[in-house]
Image (cartoon, rainbow, N blue to C red; front, side):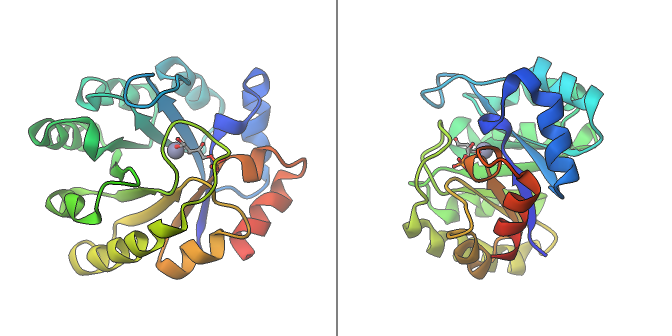
Length: 217
Ligand code: DX5
Ligand code: ZN
């Protein structure tokens, strides 16, 4: 069954603990935490102190998506703050620094993932794939919630499904951006294991129903 990872970017930050509890009760699998630095993406969101607070208030799996420049500088801090999975962008660092960051996260006993922006081809991930616990395909330009799903990313999801099955079958394939009950079936058909959904969960009054609608669509 596909996993659902609601993105708290669309939650009410004034009542974040209650928002996370709501999706836990609603059957969410991961909490997706979008970290933005205003450099790698044209927006600024939340960071290490919020991950620490989340860790202190929930036992849910924290899926931390770093949309930051040169992530190798910060991955250890996010692990210490309590991330269960740290995902960063293949476009955001030099190859040797990406490899160092992957090694750091693993040495901290956490799961590690790499993400690709829409214009980045799937093949760029091949040299890293055997070391990853998760691959994240962006189906919007990263930076903002509530954008429309890019249907032209579906072949890339399918290509990564095939690459993962051949090289590292334990690796999860996550899709992020514009996922709702209409686009979720397309992602599942293309081979996604984990669906991130921000507005399609947190902008709905009944989060359990919203999660069910995405999972079962
Ligand atoms: C975009 C973020 C996404 C975003 C998803 O930069 O990485 O996780 O919050 O939001 P929706 O589901 O509203 O597209
Ligand atoms: Zn994200």
